[in-house]
Length: 413
Image (spheres, one colour):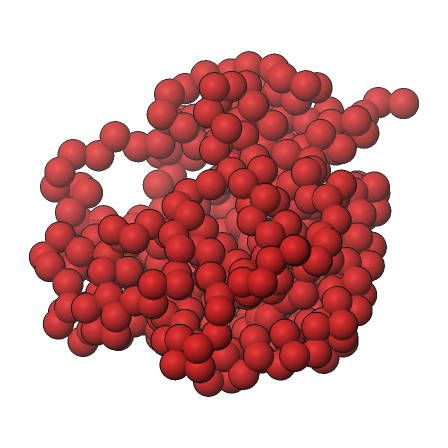
């Protein structure tokens, strides 16, 4: 039987990371690796992704097309930071459409709305399905929820101000493209109540399908055990953006210091010299018990999970956090904010604890409660692991995705 020919548009290259970055361990881990591997067993898979050069290559049953994004002069770059980006039809026609005409795929799957890949649906008769990863449009109101613009003006230098502001402008500009893409979309794939509800508004004419995401392979085989340490180790993976809730970590750590709690809070994904950290350091001050681990790979994340008593996600907005799910699947007790799609990840009081975003008092209290009732926290961690193992089962996800492709092709006819 002839295999279905599937073309993916992705912000990241999936298994091609292994091919392109053989000597760089920090670039080999991606949640897309496993679904890439699994789908390539059932379909004729092709993936378009952005990069620094234009190259095509085959690797592990998949054909990859790395496309160099635009070369813009200084005037164009400045314009794109000030006004919304235009849908670049010429880019689509000159590069992406050429590949599509040669391939003649049965279906196109666009992962994410953060980049303008989704505008391809305006120029093909092939069915296009779009996966919701994050959602810039819904994220915009939360961008400065953790660190206000006043704080940025008052406590940062020109370089930090410029970096944060330009990042926000790109965020807003890309959200304009996202809205246009979703408004035209016919088929949407999501995984939480949150993304289902927002797409009923942003993509009102679309059909919605549920399909989970795979995690990084190493997390499926790892199981957390109670660490042998008298120091309470807390662990958070965050990012270099203002809405990830790092200010809540800083305020909570100060509260725990005042209570004379013996703890260390390990922070991955953020360096001490980062602009966000510098702003908070000047405004609030940093606890000596916060330890910055920097940008680390999945093996280092596993090592930190193993020595930690609680995993904490403090974000102001998320969809279905991959890192939260990776923590859950190991069985470590978790505390997370009730933000975006996190209520679809776990049940409060059963598989972990949930607090309101930006509430350091509740977070500090939840940490104390977790440690005082640690046997109960361990039970919740085990239930969270069971849920995550079932939710992120690779064969189930692959088979569901193939079923969605077939249904979309039928519906499109």
